[in-house]
Length: 288
Image (cartoon, rainbow, N blue to C red; front, side, top):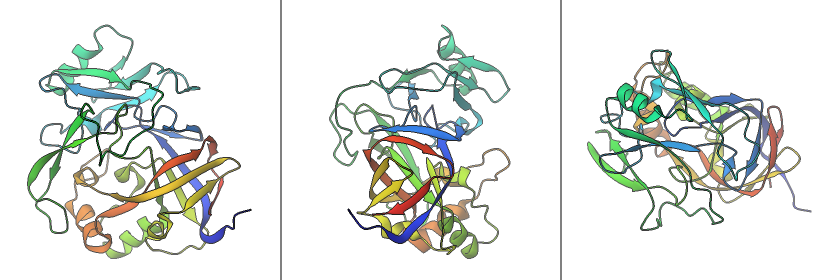
């Protein structure tokens, strides 16, 4: 039997799913996990009819209001072979469902851009890393603010999504409270809340330390609960989305600036699924 270490030992404190890419999502008590991550996560996205690109809050100059929309499933997803209907709450409180014939028209009017609500194409294929994209992989745009420590400055670039998905890179994003606590120490006036970073799984380390503990997880396996095994594939580089206002959180460029200065702009880690199963709030987490 493989050894487990105290490094990374802790528990799951929250679970999150985002049915529509770049919209607000759902906090869950439990979630099913398969090779595509949490069932229903990024199952839908908006497509810009003018160029076929995926709408993303990574380019807030074009999509400034996506965080004002909230998506949730009508029923709990039970299988990855079908995409169930969702309901979307618009900024004015209006609720629209994905089954309505006029859903595209309503969303286009609310966003002041012609869009189409699209669902992921479920295929029996391996999810590929977006760093080696398929020629036909969907693309999205990212705005890079003029900030030291980022790969680009004050420009917009295109990036390819993993084929058959609406993920930016990997199917699972894990974040620890230790990282958020460390960032709060470094920038006390910044509101480093989970919502800003849109993780799927939030872990509280048993050690109580305040540090970027996930950095040491890369290349290892996370054991969660009784069944789920995740391969930690790399750090999660952050973007302008972390600085945007949402709900009562203010716009704050200092959030991304501090991540860039203190941890190479990484907050949390990406992971792939080695073995699926059910994850519940309170499940134990350890590093193999």
